Image (cartoon, rainbow, N blue to C red; front, side, top):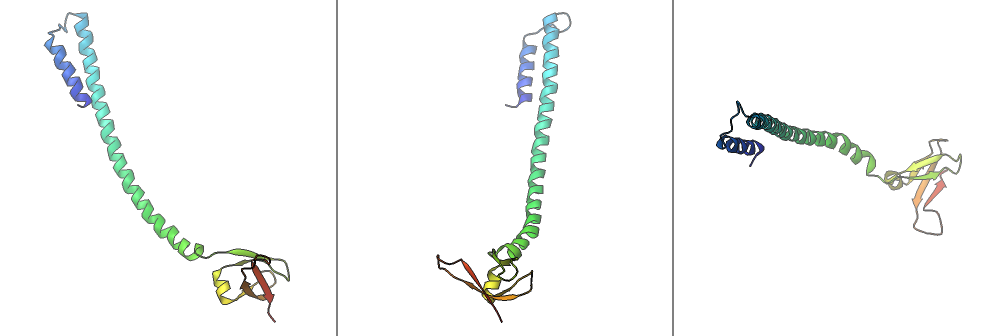
Amino acid sequence: MTISEKVAYLKGLAEGLNLDTEKSKEGKLISVMIGILEELAMSVEDLEENALNLGEEIDVLSDDLADVEGVVYDEEEDEDYDDDWFEVECPTCGADILVDSDDLANGEVECPGCGARYAMELTDDEDEDDDEIEEED
């Protein structure tokens, strides 16, 4: 039962009591209270309807935003973030060199600081560093 239906039921009960809403103070009070309840019930139902409509619009916007995010961020992630990156120090100048899986596949890396090119080899030995740079001639 909705709020409007409950107020209508209450109004019917009040009318069934045959209250004198013209002369009786109690009748006037009950009549005014029922009128206020009717207005409140209509306002609440309007608010509920608006909230449902807004919820549907938010769902549509959320879906659209997810599509946009998929286009914007997924392409970047596919290009930039699929590679595993690690950092090594250039033995010549001490600059940091970022190495990714492509560099390992190529077998060499170039130092951004001094321009020297080095052969890149990844080792599994725990006693040595995880990466080893050998200078190319």
